[in-house]
Structure formats: C-alpha cells, structure tokens
Image (cartoon, rainbow, N blue to C red):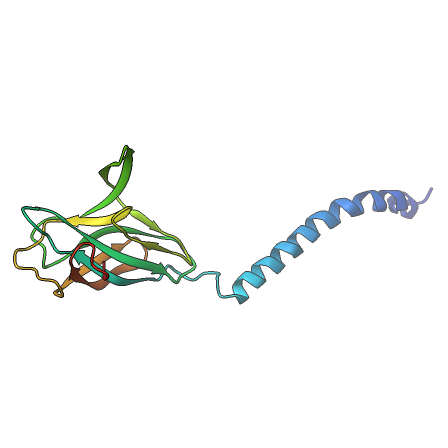
Length: 173
C-alpha cells in the first residue's frame, strides 16, 4: 500500500460527515437571514426613544391632600425602557409612582412601585385604575392650568412634559 492510498478518505466517511457539517452551516445561514431582515426593518440596534403625551392632573377637591397625574408613554425605539422617577418644579414634595389594585368587594388599594416598564415598540397608558403618579398639589391650581413635569427614564434620559389640570370625571380625564 502506498502512502497516497493510506491518506485518501473513503467515500463512506465523507457521506457520513456531510450531514454533520451541513446542519450547523444551514442554521447559521437561517440566523444570518433573520438578522438581516430584522436590521433591514430598522429594528436592530435602535435605542429606546420614549415620547410623552396626554398629560393630565386631577384637580384636588375638598380636603384632599393628594392627587393623581397621568401620561401616555410611547416607546418608538427598538429597546425596552423603564420610567424611574418623575419630578416637577411646581410640586413641593415627592412624586410617587403608584399602582392601584382591586382588593375584592369593590375596594381598592395603592402600592408604590420603583419603576414601570415601557416596552420597545409599545407603550404605557397611565389611568386611575392602574399606574399613575401621586403627589401633593400646590395650592391655587385651577382647571386648565398647565403643570410641568420631568420624566426620568433608564435609557431615554429625561423627557419634559406638561399636564393639564382637569376635574376628575370630566371628558378630558
């Protein structure tokens, strides 16, 4: 037997190893095609971009020491974001992010939460039945007044927004 014949692969070994080589190559090709389509659609690598709209703050009534603020948040980016906190120069104290939950038999309670998710390509709509901001209002607010707020996000940074003072239960609320 010559040296050349000893190192020549047999046809059987090639046909046995061909499926083992083709499977990872095909998987890589499919993954590359999917990533290319995702990138071409503009979804790859876009950071979170949160827009804030429809701000409204309930006009306090009676002896109420707290009121609620609501915003609609829309994330136009390709990455999730989180609302971490909210500040306002027109509010004397802290503003807390609150989640209202039903406790059965018509009763409800409020939990303070640390942050709120704003999913990529989606949004978050605050409401009296769900997530809102709770604060102690300044004296003298009237329906129609505009109150400035700064919303602080984990990835989008800060976003300035205005909320209009409305009466609870009015069409604008």
